[in-house]
Image (cartoon, rainbow, N blue to C red; front, side, top):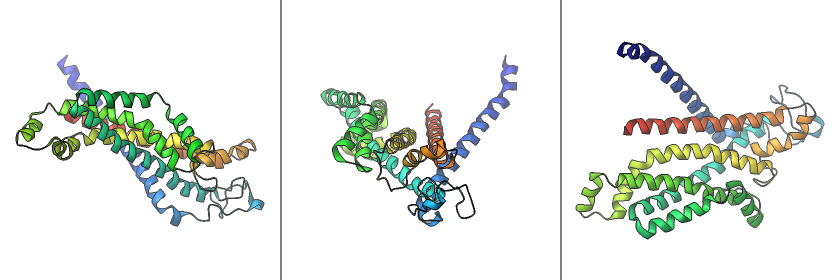
Length: 285
């Protein structure tokens, strides 16, 4: 039995290597998307809102490398500028939900008692509202744009972060080093901010990376429904909506390219987040 296990070790190592290659590929792709989003105004070959109805739905050419959409706009330019808008919204969702979720979860786990009960029940109440439904309600109340959907989805994602932070805090507060700081006279706020939160940050960061992909998908769905960014603003979700007519006419690029960008970006961030979570879990064993 021992000999068999020893023989199989290279295979397991090879499996881990394949997973590392998948992780590195996804990390590289995610980094590339971020770079494109930052440099999009300089990379775009044309004005993304400039229309040429005479060239509508033309195939790729030297002047339009990815063709032209149904409104006569350069598809490549809108795809590049759309990366900025499509990543900005999820970044806001992850930032707000992580900051608020960590604050709520750490407070509930550290204080316990009735504070834990109130904060935990409040987080569970938010879970009763689907994120997209909450975002549609906020858009109906406060109008189009990124601010209303970002706030709504931040509230929808907050319980996932707060529950994770609470469980990590309950586990971490039993560690002797935290008790030693309390004995030395440090306040609970100081111990949490300076020592506890930095120790649970890697796990929360991994979860937030996964949340980023899902938030991107949710915001793209809202833009597809016409409830996200302003109509003239380049965005992958709105590009899919605008490309539906072209798709029926046998011109799929203007719709399929943003679809591929969304899917690949979501998969890349999910794989990176899952890999970071696995690394943290192995480190703690």
